[in-house]
Length: 379
Image 1 (tube, rainbow, N blue to C red):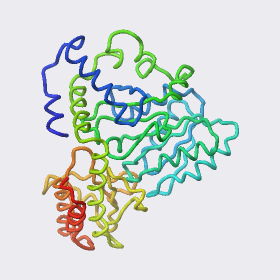
Image 2 (cartoon, one colour):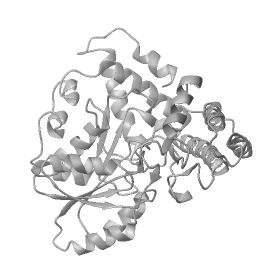
Image 3 (cartoon, rainbow, N blue to C red):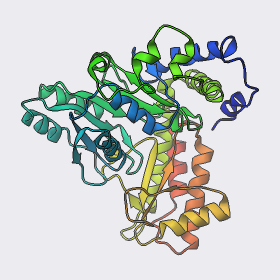
Image 4 (tube, rainbow, N blue to C red):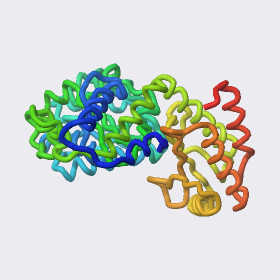
């Protein structure tokens, strides 16, 4: 988390009914549409990304409706589990682990749904477990080619502010993100952008409950209706500062920075790679995220590697998700990250792998350094 964001949050509690806080809230809500590439308003429930999932489902769908979940790792499937628990019929299309969803398979399935029983298609932009990035415009094109009216909902929790995402241009009806990761604010706020088609589905949705309800949050009255009660004061000051930082850098520059840093990480992993050791979880280069890299470890005990990195060097590696325990770890290169941070983490990993006698193909740090040097940018 940037010091600017944390410092902005560290303040006495203000009057929550008038004054500076109301100005902060207006600035945040005014800035959020551009972050997602949309003219649609955002809703901000207090909660993590899972809260955003539930807000999206409850405001647009009714019990017994069918949703098609496109899973390319782990998190879309968990979203589907929530949908089923809430009374929806759930069908899951699962890509082989390490691969993105095949848009042609989506088109084929939707063409077969001649009665249009599928009310929504749910997927992630980037799956933080596998670090696979789905081709969202291609999936939208598949839905359109099938002539299907399903809502298209996309979880951007791992990618927002890191990867190019254009909600309106890409034809996404509901976008979900959260304050952590690329938006550089501690966990605690979900963000849901609702497009015109989603808002049109809202009045007849019977999963609606008062806390999540979009209608209640847009009624005329005190500003705190937007939060269904007391606002999350420190988080609002924090995310305002984060949004200002994003605006100062510019989204195009920000996306380019994340790609450069991801290229450095990928250069390191490629150099480290051996048949029985380190390798990529995401199988295809064009499907690898610019926000996070999942690394399989083969014969190297990933848990032992992570323990030593934390205990000896103070570096916390992301645990592997969706694979057998001890077989993978993740590097998050998202949000407030620069080249020295990335090189430091890569150096720790290389040191620890060498110490524990793991197979390594060469110096990933040197490869990453060379990639950054060739990019011509310091960050």
